[in-house]
Length: 148
Image (cartoon, rainbow, N blue to C red):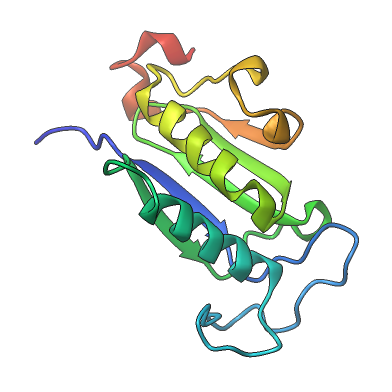
């Protein structure tokens, strides 16, 4: 069975912009097309990311995974990038204005060998958004020495 060649882009739906009160309904899925006045900043980020992916000239190596809560409320809207055999990244302080930059970051991440993308290779809008990085699963380490 072949390796997954797509970045999984997890986007928190319940996030609010940093400094604003977090949503109270963290146990339910937010409908991004509901037209509700209660739409969260995370849901707006998700919708903007989907628009950016749909507007691409060619299919992108990204699978979007909406998440009900990523428990990073103090850092505003949060997303994470992951792939088998690569470092995973948690990024925060996002708004829907960074959607295209986030899609570009996920595309560069997919093409990278280890998942490490230096700040100089990210959009200026994303240079200071990395909250944490997590090593690949131990089963993947032997397959990719570059992640050590």
